[in-house]
Image (tube, rainbow, N blue to C red; front, side, top):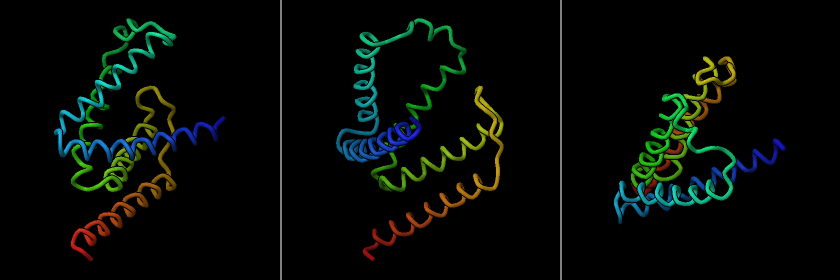
Length: 152
């Protein structure tokens, strides 16, 4: 089951890269806000139908959730908007590596302190090394992109 979940996450990552590229391209024609809006409104319509026909909970209970949990919607909007903004400027791979570095950094802090009700997983040298290697990867990608942009 864990392998299936890992493969599903890889598929999700593949879809995010494709979405980033397509949305970045669309934003140069339609605009950043408009592209972000189209993505969210389409997602909202699809999810509305899924909840309507396959939902297993009570949507009204969302309003009873602690307010800090509801704040997560702004992070999703912010992530998508910033991705649509960044891709045309720095490319898909630099945007995605930067996103992953942000996720790793935040994840390290969230795990280490057990924030948001998660398990506490203390920071160790392996996590630090993973973070450092991602920063090095971003640097190499940035240098390669700059070199190629100059025609070299």
